[in-house]
Image 1 (tube, protein in one colour):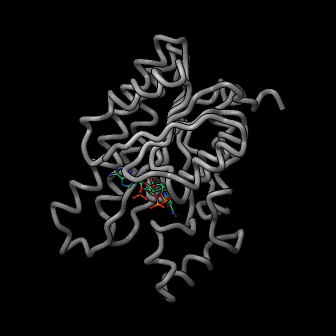
Image 2: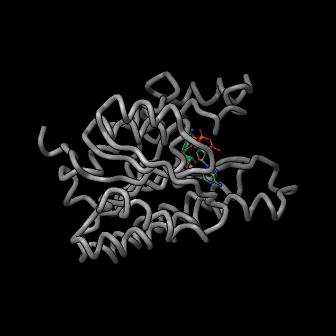
Length: 250
Ligand code: NAP
């Protein structure tokens, strides 16, 4: 399994306090990686599980609504651990409202966190990785990188943008041995989908379309994350890997 071994590597994972980011960060730590958890509230659960795996953990406080602290995040990772190998752009928010009533604030907040900060953090990380001879950037996309969705215009715009940026960055960074890919989770049971899970009509409609016949969990993303973070994916770049229980195949 040495192809998938990332022992001694260092990963920044944004939004790792809960949900999919927590699952991804734990998966990377299980494969041997030290973790910088970046978010706007401490991450005691992740800190405990990384320590239990014998890996090192650093929490970095950052509000990704703004881009001002992004350079400091990359600097802190390198100062603490001496290197940066992997960036997982996981932090993301969603606002649900009819398109005809959708506000400018709900547009700007979502685009800022999901798209603008993702781009500028990738830029800062790639500058560091380029100096060190390579790295891996993993973006968290969505089914709405492929489909339109309903009542989530800024989210759909942001995740469609994430798919495009994944390919642009892959094109520009390949010459620096930096691979850029995305994971597109299907319908996963987290805070992000709480409103859908609680809506009996929508949740039944969603479940009926999932061939695997269940919502996904954060653990379901571990394999894809380790693959895209490791040497096993060195010739894979610009790809959007759906982890969706078959949703897109339906
Ligand atoms: P979640 O539990 O709400 O996780 C979102 C994470 O982002 C949280 O850790 C949150 O931190 C962090 N975050 C939000 N705003 C932030 C900000 N301004 N600055 C820093 N961190 C911020 O939901 P999730 O489902 O795990 O979402 C993770 C990613 O997966 C998102 O990009 C989401 O769009 C994507 N996704 C989810 C699904 C799904 O079905 N759940 C499907 C496709 C894609 P706090 O908890 O501390 O606020």
